[in-house]
Picture (spheres, rainbow, N blue to C red):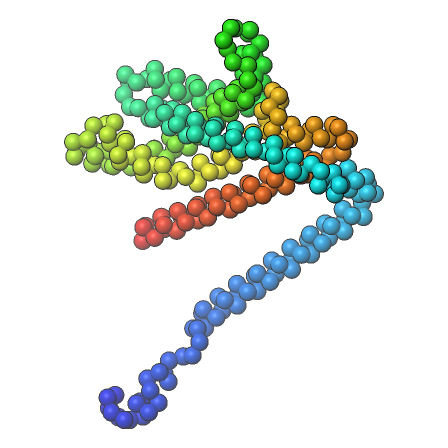
Length: 294
């Protein structure tokens, strides 16, 4: 009967006492997950099948199909719109770099403590409020038409330049608030500890507060830049021939709206992966926070 000898426990082995397979609770959880997934798939297929039947059997479906889903004009317009989309990418990249810098400056200025910095905080607040209140299309229009319309010698008239400036002004106001929220989320004890080690206020902000704040605001920043990517089509209003303007030119010349569907497909291909990546970052940060809180 000894556990070390050749008794019954040895012949059967201690492993005979261990249950085979996953524990019952784990099996129940796995079964519930499989059932939920199956229900979700079946309900999704049923819903979209019903929607397709309703759309295809609608009285005006043939006209809509010819106007928006013409395969000939889709094949014709897609490469041309994709080529013009490079202008959107250039606008996005240039504006994004400027936005990141200007918005961070605004957030830091609004976070400066003390009455001596009140005028600076006031100016930063007014800037943020003004450019968050005025629609982006109006900013694009005012800059793109108004400044060249002054006729001042030496003032550039390139609409691409004013498109970049307009997008930067508008989105800097929004992104600065994201930065500021990240800065204010850092506990004051972090700055106090840095100051106790001999760091100045600027050094504490640069080496202690900002690195932590920037890591926290990456997901919301990506959400803002998804919006920026889509809003690059606003600059077509002042004559920049980007993807939307190219689609409008083709639509006006061919009297068919299929180019807009080609443009929508391009934005879907570009935007959805970035949105899913943003969601993944949010989930990862939430799990990391919960793990640290335990």
